[in-house]
Image (cartoon, rainbow, N blue to C red; front, top):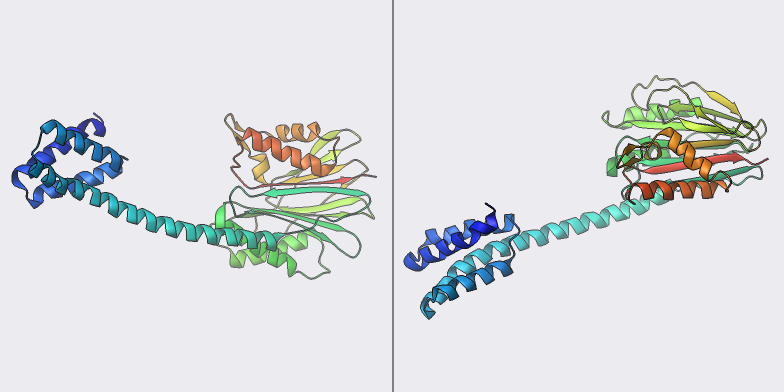
Amino acid sequence: MEFRDLLEPKYKEIISGYLKNQNEQNLYQGQKLSRKLIEHNISPEEIISLHKSIMVDSEATQEKLIDSFDVLLEVMMGYGLAYREHQSLRTEQMAIKNEIELAATMQQTLLKTSVPQMADIDIGALSVPARQMNGDYHHFVKDERDRIGIAIADVIGKGIPAALSMSMIKYAMDSMPDNRHNPSEILESLNRVVEQNVDPSMFITMFYGVYDPAKHTFCYATAGHEPGFFYDSATQQFQDLNGKGLLLGINKKTTYNEYEKEVDPGDMVILFSDGVSECRTEDGFIEREDIIGFIDKYIHLPVQEIVTNIYKDLERIQDFELRDDFTLIILKRTR
C-alpha cells in the first residue's frame, strides 16, 4: 500500500490522540509524520486540506478545532525547517555555480587558440565541452618557417579536475622553447610535466602533428590518443593515422616515435577526441565507419562547414545532450 493511502488514517489517529490527551508524545508523532511527508513529496497544501476535511467530518467543537491546530502547526514546522535548509543549500549551489561559470570563462580565454591562415591550406576546428568546463584541449602553432603545429589532447574524465589538467598542458606548451618543433620532443617534454604534476588516477592522451608546407608532409606522434584519419584524395580512401605511444604521465622516461605522411592537393588530416569516436546513441556507440560516413557526406564543403555539420549531426543523434567533450579538427591541402 502506498504512503498516500495510509496518510489519512494516520493523520486522523494523531489528531484524535492529541485531542484526547494533549501531551507531547502526540505532538512528537506529528514531527515524525512531517519527515515522512517531506520524504514522499506531500505538499503543505495537501496536509492543510486533509486537516480541514478530517475536522469537518468529525463535527468537532470550536474548542477542539482550535486545539487541533497544535498538531497542524507541529507538522508545518517540519516543512519550515526543510524549507530553510533548502534555501541554504540553494544559496550555496548558486555561489558554486557562479564560481564555475567564472572559471569556465577564464578557461575559455586561457585555452583560446587562433586557426592559422595559409594560401594552400584550409583548417576547420571546433571544440565544445559536455559541461561548462572543457576536458579537451587543442592548439595551433605557426613557426617562422610557416610550419603548422597541431595539438589535441583529452583528459579521461570531465569537470573541474579535467579542466585544470588541460590548463596545465596549455601553460606547458606556451613555456616550450621556440626552436622545439618535433612532435616526439614535444610529447616527451609534456610527459615529464604531467608525470610530476597530475594525480596518477588521471590519464591524458595527446596527439601532436606538424604540417610542413615546403615539403608537403605531416609528421606526428601520439601519446595513446584516438587515431585520426588521413584522406587520400587520389584514391578517395580514408586511412587510420596509426601510431604507438604511452599516455602522458605514466612513465617520465617514455619516448615517442614519429610518423610521416605526404600530403597532396585534396588530401585531409582529420583529428578528434573520443567525444567524437565514442558518441553514444540509444543503439550504442557509433563506429569509426560512421564518422567516415559523416565526413564523406560533407566532403564537398569547406572544412569548417564539414566540422560544424558533423557536430550538429552527432549532437542530434545524442538528443542534443553531449556525453563527452567534443573536439574535431580537419586540415586540408587545397592545392
